[in-house]
Image (cartoon, rainbow, N blue to C red; front, side, top):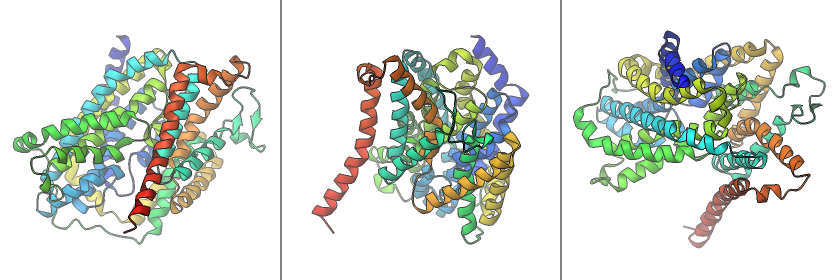
Length: 498
């Protein structure tokens, strides 16, 4: 009970409200700018939260996360250019409505649906996280190793078009995670005499470089553009009662789908939004309207998109396993504050846990308020040329990487990882598995070696532990599913070459 009271005191303090408002404004702008998104936004934000309390930094990041997921729909509706990958489904009917002069209605549906999805996803997090955390307290070293492996394999399998490339990225991340002091022996390894690497490869340098700097290079490579919004004028957006009656069922179904799929590591909004849209279309009385400006074609994917936020935080808080790039970044932020997500966090820092649990719901309400009142101003950021956006990202990336330890070494590492991330994008290698493997590396290695020590070197401990066996089977399934899909697609292509 004390944790709940302390968390609410933080949330409704002047600092807490300011963090939520700032996060909402930044999130909507970052989400609306094509090419950016919550991962890049959080990677740039983390260094500036170093001196904040863990509760305030989490409130700021959650607010940015939820608002950025919504912000992607603004450019999707006005420009047919999704600001985030998850907003691609929204662009189909959203842009069609904007072309008919109904841009404000489309944005009001998107904002309301995103808010409903965020609230329902937050409620699911509130109800599920604690029971799962209590269950996770029964896990031993073998179980935690298998859980970490499951989180890694599932995301590696689902974060890119190629399973092999995803796994190669995960292997690279695990290799980087071995740099620094050995967690068992306590001796330096792979540091090459560089004292800056004794604490490991700087996580923030890798994070900012792979996500933000690589995107800045990609944007700078493009020809400078100025976006035209045509006749789509954005005013204050409030949803009418008639539209709410027409779309509320799609909002609820989209929220349920988004929450359930968000809990599964590696799925997230990119897939949930399409599943929700297809479900809404299948049960709609007028499915032929989809693609021509159907309001439910916006409501369903947008609700599911934001509902995945609460869903994705369930495994992070209860098991200590991030299921997406964005939650991996949040896990890195907690580690930076000396905290380790997982069941122990509920007993060690209850105020922080409840700040996150309540923060998702309250951040969704703040997002609605900010989006309703200030959207006409924030939509103007879509007119910024790509060169200006790239320069701004690079400036914040260099400043943020230097701010943590005041070392130029971290700046050079950030730029180096930026070049690596740019090359990976050029070669269609997903960068998410690299970051996830770096975050999960310590969990996987330390529990793997601890389990072997406790079993006197016998690998049977991983097969006799029921929790370990369950997650090892899930890991195998997460790898087998994409392999089967590729094999099935090739078989169909061979049968019907046309």
